[in-house]
Length: 299
Image (cartoon, rainbow, N blue to C red; front, side, top):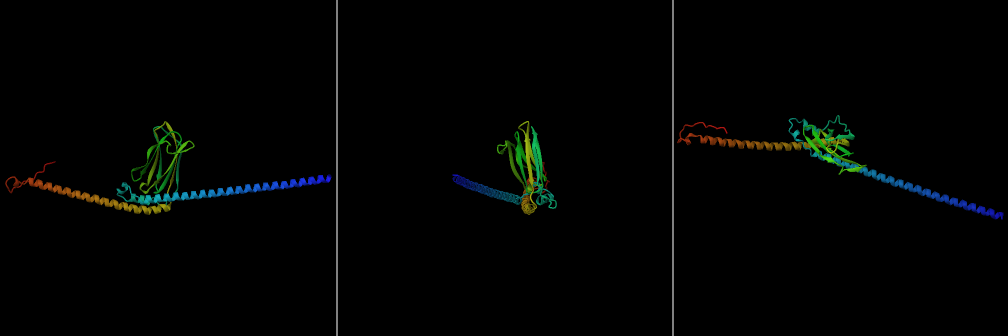
C-alpha cells in the first residue's frame, strides 16, 4: 500500500511537472507572439512614419518648386512702374532690377507677432513690415479671439504710389478654420520686383465693437542668394523689354504730336491765306494795285 501511494505521488508530481512545463511553454509562446506583434507594430509604425516623412519632404519640395516657379514668373513678367519709367535718373530702375547688395545680403527671416492686442472702437492698428528683396514671401496668420474686425493690406512703394494688396474687409471667421473656438486665417504674399523696396502695412480696423482682441504672426522669408542672382538676370531682360516697349510707345506718341503740329500749321496757313485774300483791295476796288495790310481781330 505504501508503495502504491508513493508511486501515485510520483505520478502526480510528474504530471504536475509536465503541466508546469506545458504552461511555461504556452506562456513563452504567448510572450514570443506578443513580442513579435509588438515588433511588427513598431515596424509598421516606422514604415508609416517613413512614408509620412517622405510625403512631407516631397510636399515641401513641391512647395519649393511651386514657389521658385512663381518667383521666376514674377521676374520674367517684371514691368517697371510708371514712377520708375518717368524718373529722369536710372537709379530707381537699377535698384529694382539689382535688388539688395550681395555684399550685405544675409537672407535672414524675420517674424513679427502680436498676442491679444486690443483695438478699441473706431480705431485701427497698423503693423508695417519692411520688404527690400524681390521674391520675398510674406506668410501671415491672423486670429480672431473676440469680436469681428477689418483686415486690409497695402504696399507703400519707395518710388512712390500705394498698391492695395488686400482690400479692407471684415474678418468674421466665416471662411476661416475653427480651432479651439478661435478663428484663424492664414495666407501668403509674393512680393515681386515691381513692388520693392516697399513697406507692407497690415491694418486691423475695429468698427464693430467697443473693443476687440487681435493676434497675428507675420513671417518674412527672403529669397536665397542663388534665387536673387538668377532673378536679377531675368528682371534685367524683362526690364529691357519693357523699356523698349516704352520707347516705341513714346516714339508713336511723339510722331502723333508731330502730325498734329503739322496739321495745325496747315490750318493756320489756310486761315492766313483766307484772311489775306479777304483783305486784298483788288477784290474790293476794281483791281487797284494799292494794298492794305490785313487786320487781325482778336478772337
